[in-house]
Length: 291
Image (tube, rainbow, N blue to C red; front, side, top):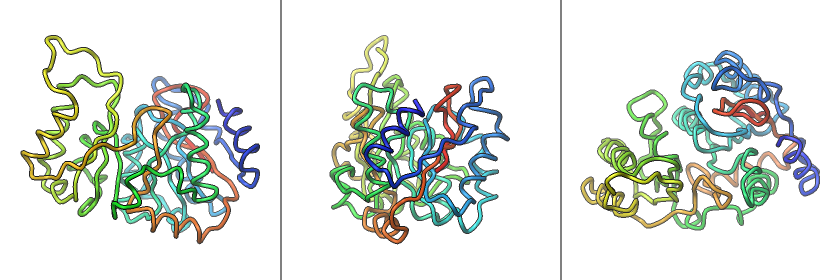
C-alpha cells in the first residue's frame, strides 16, 4: 500500500516528498505499535519543522488512547502544519481543533487506495495538500462558512472530554459505517442533545454505509433518524454531505475553505508529507503518518 501511494505521488505531484514513518509498519495486537510508540511517532513528526503536513495513514481505532498525551507535547512548529485524515483520526483532529490548531482537514487517507476506485480518493487528498485544489472539496463547503466533519460514533464518544472542539456556528457533517441503525439513532441522540453541539449552524448527513440488518427492522432510514433528532433538538437539518467511508469521500477543511486555503498558500508547495497514527489494522499502512 505505501509503495502504491508513494508512486502515485511521484507521478502526479513530484514536488511532494512523501515519507511513511517506520511506526506505520509496527504491530502490537490491535494497533500499529504500542500507545507509547504511536504517540512518540506523531509528536516526532508534528514537532519537526522540516515537514509541512501530517497525513494520517488509516483509521480504525486507537487515537483516543494517545491524544491527550500527544497533544500536550506539541510545539510551535506543530501549529503550522496541515493535519489530514478521517474516521478514528477524528479523535486527534478534534483535539487539535479544540487546542487552536488552524489547519485541520477531513479527507481520504493512504489506506483508501485499497478500495475500489481508491486511487481517485488518494489523489483528492494529494491534490489538496500539494496545490490547494478546490475540486477536491465537498460541494457545500464553499458556501457554508465554518464547517467540520466527523465519523458519527467517533464524535459521540468525544463529547464531554477535553478533546471536544467548539463547533459553534459550524455546519457539522457526519458519516458512519458498519453500525446498526439503532446505534446510529443512539449516537445522534447523544450528539444532538449536547448543549454545545446545539450551537452548530446545522447538520449535514454523509453516507452511512455497510449498515447491518436489524432484527426486527428498525423502521427508519438514517435520513429519517437525523431529521427526527434535529427537529427534537432545534438544530437545522441541511441535507446530505458528500463524505463517507468510501472512495468518493471529499475534503472538508475545519473552519472553512478560505482559511484553509490561505494557510496552505502561505506555506507554498509541500516539501514532504509523512504518515502517522494508530490504526485498527496491523502492519503497513496503519494509522500513523508522517510527512
